[in-house]
Image (cartoon, rainbow over all chains, first blue to last red):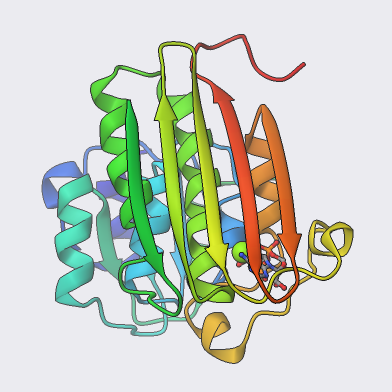
Length: 114
Length: 143
Ligand SMILES: Nc1ncnc2c1ncn2[C@@H]1O[C@H](COP(=O)(O)OP(=O)(O)OP(=O)(O)O)[C@@H](O)[C@H]1O
Ligand SMILES: [Mg+2]
């Protein structure tokens, strides 16, 4: 489904790369450990994480991720936005927990990677 | 083509810069995106390992029409038991490294998984050297 639908459904706020919101997302992976994320081979993947630092965006860059949802009200920094814009990665801030947003996305039909 | 990048231990702001550069180069060379992903994921894990576990290091990248060979050579504490370090889940990462989002103990096994050929050598008290080879053409993976 389109990233745009998904953002509206969860009630997240898009911090950058709104022009990429028509991208398709098929599955999602939730982790605060980037090396776990880097083992995922699926395409059209969305990352859900509580790790709001530059390495989360780097991980998305290397893994060709579509978007990152930052949970628990973690704030995205200017550095992160700059790097995300270079690579067209949609950054989304979300006030609730990782469990809550995972449940919402699951009910919407976003698939787990295994 | 030959490229070199320096990596500083403890620098989690710049860790990933070399991987980012290599990704741009491979894109320009029109390498298949699934192959690029394997290369840069392996390289990025290696680069972060230098930042996380070593004092400093140099990454040497050689690209020809058939393959990419990446050597990551660091000055650092070295790895006393390589077999143990290669086990998924084994990690000695410090609390600072964990705060940066690393320390799952998945890096080295994932580098091996993404490489067509992988070598690791290490000397305690001196440093660690990784050699990663990936074939650039699809359907040519592994043996
Ligand atoms: N360049 C290195 N110098 C010294 N020790 C290293 C180096 N690379 C890896 N190690 C050792 O091997 C262990 C396993 O490495 P690996 O990359 O698999 O996991 P990690 O770096 O601890 O966590 P992750 O990569 O999942 O974030 C490390 O915890 C560390 O003890
Ligand atoms: Mg590692």
